[in-house]
Length: 418
Image 1 (cartoon, rainbow, N blue to C red):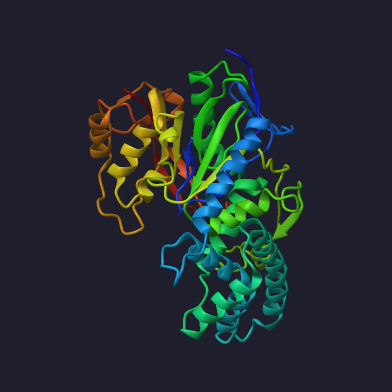
Image 2 (spheres, helix red, strand yellow):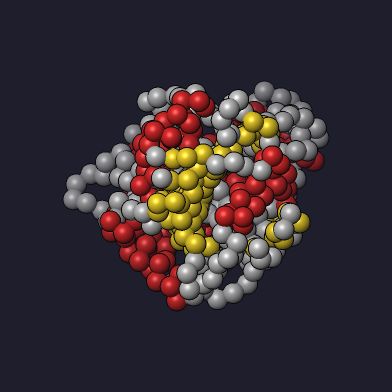
């Protein structure tokens, strides 16, 4: 057993990440682990500053080439699900952040006579948030090779048809900066991430750069693990690309006001207007290779099959339209003897074709070719009598200083591919 120091961060990337740690679109982002220095059993989390190995640079360049090929504009109209259209829709949302937020604020202000002073303060903070939103747009245009004129035309065409930019996805992406990259999100990170890290440490106590353990993980960089992240949501992807850019990755370089669009459960007006600064540590752009797109189709190259030592699904499997396809994909990507680590709830969304109970998921996983392993009792009580599944309370998506709390009984298991 070796004592290792890690810097880990889960980045937006609901949320669908591969250590494959997989974060879902709903919980995405980012899906990035944070960077506070905390004691976790034998693991100490800290910032690691190092140059990227040549192999990592090659992986980034190779994946970006594949990405730009997939984003290439075809002849004729873009289909609804073409990745370029989804990218433009996300940029439309960030581009119109201030316009939509101001419209929402004006709607509220007409209902309350006492709001004028508060409204002026909120308007100023919306403009400050918009600075970050426009930086995200500018960096994405450069990174993806999209001309601003193309975005302008897309915005004009969409709005001329009577549609507007998506507001909720933009707001959620900005809030994931807090969940994943700021001290204020530590209460969520600390409830789940240590269980994953401790499990990986026990499974792979000896690692070296020449023969890294390949992990499919949503936006997470771990010491001498070769990490691949996967995310479907373009809102999460463009936000992640910005925070790992030279301008966005500097420690404490950005400040946003994430609570100004959520007036419920606020104890004071000051809490509504509270600023959050991030990232708490510099983001390392070399630690993770991000693969954008649908988890079930993004890894179809022959070299991807049986490639990974571990796949970690964090707040992810319930985002599937067909959870059986997710399980089969995880099995295909793992090496024989490879490990699947799951932690998350069963809150189905995205118009699922099937919604399985926990015992059905375990039965199907075993039928596909997984054997569940014993896990540490510190990871919670047994969920199903006679089955090797544990549960823990996992807070998600809330500000601990408000008057509400949101949490799941997250299910945890470790399974080996036969």
